Length: 336
Image (cartoon, rainbow, N blue to C red; front, side, top):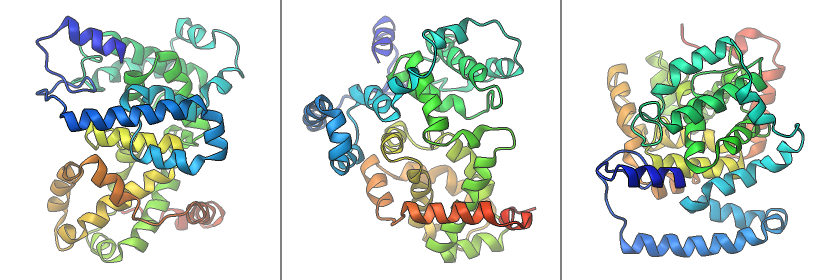
């Protein structure tokens, strides 16, 4: 965040929001400032006894997270949830810097160079080959060399760019490693994307359960969530929602894990079912462009947690997907 503030001071004529995205700037209200300061004090107290709170008062921590982590503490708290210091200890000293300095003609690195200009071009940190783009390249390069089986996949850049707004590039690298392994999203980005297929099976199963009438309507159009869901979930909704909502989703993801991915998806369509039933494909596509704009952060999070979804249900769906021997069973939701 300090880098962003320095860039803003250097180019004062550029209007940006509080996250550094270029937009007509608006000053926060005194009410918002008071609320944010009160939340900050509570979080600072909680961080003093972080290990105790995580082990003994996790439900209390979870409740706080769902209200939003203070912006100035986000990077620290995300890194704490990801347990990156413990992760670093499993690798040689200077592991990240050695990866960034390693000369390689890895094909993934060429792909990265083509893609970094497309990530947050309207953010002051990532404009015009600036420091953000350079840091983004280094983190993506380091990960491609760290995990050669995966390398690089489009969609990863959005998450790393968001991390870089809130933490150092080395911490962003280790947080990405945690996202892939501790949070089990590596399968989203591997060649052939096995994790995406599994996630889509769960999404479609949940969709048909929670919103059956809309599900039947989409089936009649041969238009299932698998058509558009991958780009949403691969970016953890960063490419979908306004920044304030994306950050709240990330807060919950780092605290509670992948369950929020499914809750958010079902919530969007559950709230919009009356608008979508009876529409054709073109109308649905148009509505999908504006649906995420219809929420404030508090509205989105509040309605998302009205959906009852336990870990056991997700585990059962995962087991169902993995253990059925019929390959057609795994692909029943794909429209050809």
